[in-house]
Length: 365
Image (cartoon, rainbow, N blue to C red; front, side, top):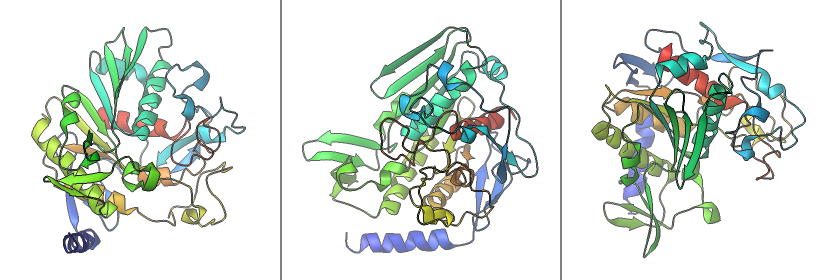
């Protein structure tokens, strides 16, 4: 093991450092090209939706948090006393085109009787809550049901037969309780059985891969029946994500299921990331408005991009990392009712609404 990990890390470093072109696929199986070194991207012949700026829009937010029954309390910053609301008033504007406005009636009609599942950690919960509220605000009198059972939550818009699911899994790969303790199995996805039969799958994972100490929910890592006490976290993430990619290749029928992967959602605990080292997200009230975010592209983004470039089935990359890095103002801060300072999740209404505007545009644009 002592030789394997440094060698693998060196291989990954060389692999990710090369200025190579990776081939991606859009939802319809068309090849598009992204240059990893420059981050430039064309989307199905359209402009780059992920290269733009935040602009003030008086018509925002897209819903009233006090009338949405689906917001997890930890994301309802106004309910917990956040005094400012300007963070709700920003709309993402690509430089060379405009995103189509979200239209829930169109969404409900086109996805009547369909199933959409978000799979991932609490950032997936953020996005799941957001989409449910965005739709509900257009049809506030329609019949809805909400159920939660272990890892699975469901919102159903009964008059349209549309079901939104959330499957909570921090790593996508399996985390099992066994005799030796809690084991993270980076080459196994038994829980994937619950993801079958969906019309849309939106995956997300990253934050929990970095947790250590008492915040780490596993005792051992298992790969090919071998147990490891620890591993370089980027290598670990790469291996786990490769297992997920293999699951998609084997189990997804692109004619029935559209697959998305949500890009790395940044945190804003360290003000040095935006050249203000004495600050965190706490009391931030405006986005970062300059184009080049000082912290640069996270290594986790590079790993996601590399894995997606090699996947055989069409997977649409919702590349929200940079536009989310700009939103140092949009976290719950001290207004979550759960954490003293939360600079990792996002207030609702807020940034995850834009993730769903991009999802809507990719599905219907």
